[in-house]
Amino acid sequence: MIDYILIIPILTSFFVTLFLLPFWIKKTNELGLVWRDMNKLSNWEKISGSGGVIAVLGFTIGVLIYVAYRVFYLGNYNSHLVEIFALLSVTLILAGIGFIDDLFGWRKGGLSKKSRIILVLLSSVPLIAINAGKSIVNFPFFGIIDLGNVYPLIFIPIGVLGATTTYNFLAGFNGLEAGQGIILLGALGIVAFFMQNSWLSVICLCMAAALAAFLTFNFFPAKVFPGDVMTYPVGGLIAIIAILGDFEKIAIFFFIPYALEVGLKLRGKLIRQSFSRPHDTGIDLRYDKIYSLNHLAIYLMKRAGIKPGEKKTVFAIWAFQLLIILIGFVIFRKGIF
Image (tube, rainbow, N blue to C red; front, top):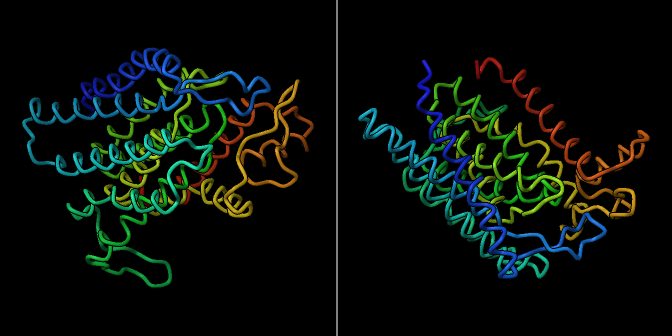
C-alpha cells in the first residue's frame, strides 16, 4: 500500500529548486559566476554557472522531510536512518568537491585528476563506516562469493568513483545531464520499489524531482548550467542507491551509455571535448572523429539526412538511455518483479 503523504518530500524537492533557482541565476550573473554556452554561435553570452547546487539543496531538504515523516509520523527511529544519513553525507561531500572544481574553472583544468580521484574516494567513507550493502556477490563464472571486508573497503569506493566520474563525462549540451539523471534515477526508483526498498524509491524520486525543476531552467536555451556541483552528487547517488539496494548489476547495465562514453573519451585521450561546432543553421561535428555519444548522435543524424540540432542531440541520447533501461528490465525481470 502506497502512503500518499510521501508525495510531500518529493514535491518539496521540486518546489524548493524551482523557487530558489531564479535567485541563484540573478546573483551569479551579478557576481560573474557565469560560463559560455559552447554549442551556440553567440557563445560570448554568459550563462549562470553551478546552478546544480540548488538542485542538491532541494534534494537534501526533501530527504530530510522524509526522515522527519519516518520519525514523527511513523515513529520509526531505527529503520534505514543510518543508511539515509550516510547517503546524504556522501552526496553533500561530492557536491562540495564538485563546487570546488567549478570554482577552480573547468577550462583551466579544475582540480587535478589525482586530487579529484582521491577526494571522490574519500567521499565514500560514510558508506564504508556503516558497512553499506551486502558483501555476498554473485560473479559470472565464479558463482557466489562472500567478499567480507573487501566489499566496503575496496568495491564501495571504486563504485562511487566510477559512477561519479563517468556520469560527468556525458555532458555539455543544454539539459543533457539533468535529463539523464531523471531517467536513471526514475528507473532505479522503480527497481528499488519492486525489490521491496521503497525508502530508496522515495530518495530517487526526490532527486529526480529536483532535477526536473532544474531542467525547466537548464533545457535549451539554458539559463543556468549544472556544473560539477550537480553531476558529481547525481553520479555518486546512482552508485549509492545500487549499493544500498543490492542491485549493482542492474545499475551497471543501465550505465552502458556511460561505459561507451568513457571508451570514446579514451579514444580522444581524455582531452577531446563533447561539444559540437555551432553554425548559422544548427550544429556540426567538432572533430573529424567521434569522441563522444554527442558526436555520434550528430553523425547519425547527418547520415539519416536530419539536420542536427542541440535539442535533437539531447533527445537522441535520452532515447538511447531509455532503450538501454527497457532492455535491462527485460534481462533482469526475474530479479526485479
